[in-house]
Amino acid sequence: MALVEPSDYVAILDLISRYSRTFDSSDVTAFANLFTDDARLDTPVGNPASRSEIETWARDRWAELRKDGIRPTHFQTNTVLDTSSPDHATGSTQLLLVWHHASTNKSELTGTAIYEDEFQRTDRGWKFLRRSIGWGGSTQENS
Image (cartoon, rainbow, N blue to C red; front, side, top):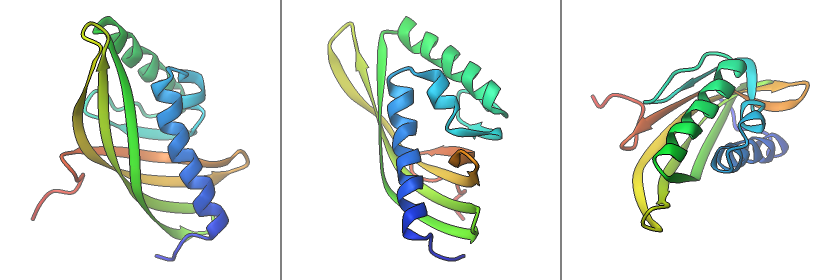
């Protein structure tokens, strides 16, 4: 694997930031548009396997969160990226997830995780090809 070119690194970091901002603001269409048509999102609460399914998943997830009086905030940091070709990159990003509870007006740290990602350069810029979340710090099994 090679290091990502600086301009691609900035573009991918922007994509990662937009993931948090669009989901946390419940802009499910903008959220889904961060993914390729054939993307996959692997989470503990669903595994949508296309941009269309990701949009439906995000809409349904937000309905559940609203019903429970929860507003999420994703804090993503410490991203490490590599490239395998000029149009494909992989990486991992640490996550802190905070839930704000409307009923108590209090926030709680829900958990820590690591996203393992594949990114694809498209005619619309860099997009997520696959995003998998591993709670507790890693998506990799401990050996």
